Amino acid sequence: MTKRSLGDLPRAALDGRRALVRVDFNVPLRDGRVTDTTRLRAAAPTIAYLRDAGARVVLLSHLDRPRGPDPALSLRHVVRELERVLGTPVEFLPDPATGAAATRHLPRGGVALVENTRFWPGEEANDPAFAALLAALGDFYVNDAFGSAHRAHASTVAIARLLKPAVAGFLMERELRHLGALLAEPARPFVAVLGGAKVSSKIGVLRALLARVDELLVGGAMATTFLVARGLSVGGSLVEQDAVEVAQALLAQAGAKLVLPRGVVVAPSLARAAERREVPVERIPADCAVFDIDTATRRDFRARIVAAKTVFWNGPMGVFETPPFDGGTRAVAEALAEASAGGAVTVVGGGESAAAVAGLEDRLTHVSTGGGAALEFLEGKPLPGVAALDDA
Ligand code: ADP
Ligand code: MG
Image (cartoon, rainbow, N blue to C red; front, side, top):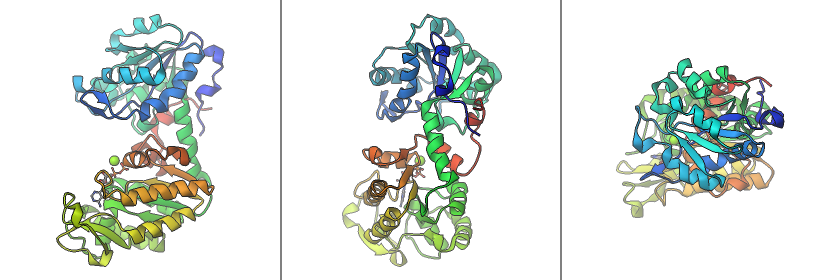
């Protein structure tokens, strides 16, 4: 079902009106400072379009997982960086219950940011009364928070029933278009690459992708769980014991479609990187752990990726935060860029994988801003935040 988009609204319907825009400003903070502005920049086109059309822009977002009001997780910390990204002052509204007057006094093209919606219990309860408070801050609703679309919360779902029109912003639209294309009629071969830490949180997407792709390449700690499922010893590697059985079932079902590493990079510990070496998966020493895929596997994965016409990637191939164990992840990122240059559609799911392709974005078709939301979408689950928007 396609959804009505911001671009479908006549510009005259925006002029002077208060646009209440749900964005995803769930940014990383260190000592009260934004360390990565990707999500702020990702929302900028929708905000600029609204300002240009004369709207008064009121932004709503959550930040992290506070249990009640928590100064460390206030969206105040985001204001200065947001002003820099947008090139305009941003008024901060600390309380939605008393913010309506301020939104009416915003100049045309002015921008306000409401406090972290999760400071109020009504947000995660999808409480209509809290949604009504939020709805009083705008004259129409725009959801540009793809990364939060898999959660039925007051600022993503209940509000869309109260405040009309309720439309998709440009980022939301772009995410749905690129991820939707993977489900619709992907050009083949379609290769998916999955990694990261856990099998259990990605069983749904593993199953769904296995049904759609030509090959599924598995790396990261996810692969060690599969190696255990194959009966191999993995030393002190991170393994999800509870998921070994389901990994066995997936292996049986997938056959040759599921491609595991041939060899891995091992070391006694992350700190003892100088002692790292490459070994075949059949010979992982008992006193070592797996921290990356080896050179032979990088070559194998690269060959399969560059031969593909569609590639989806989620999850790092190793402990990429700790060089030199970022080599496998970097190799896969480069292979995706190479596939793109050859005309393939290349899409990266959010989370750590998005960080792993930092600097390569321009050479890929799409880097999703939503980790969990992108995976649930690819599983074929309806996203409540999308479903709640007006149909086109
Ligand atoms: P994403 O956010 O991209 O979906 P996950 O959250 O599932 O990925 O997993 C990311 C984490 O997996 C990273 O912090 C990385 O260090 C870890 N990881 C990857 N490979 C290994 C490994 N072999 N051993 C331990 N941790 C790993
Ligand atoms: Mg993650």
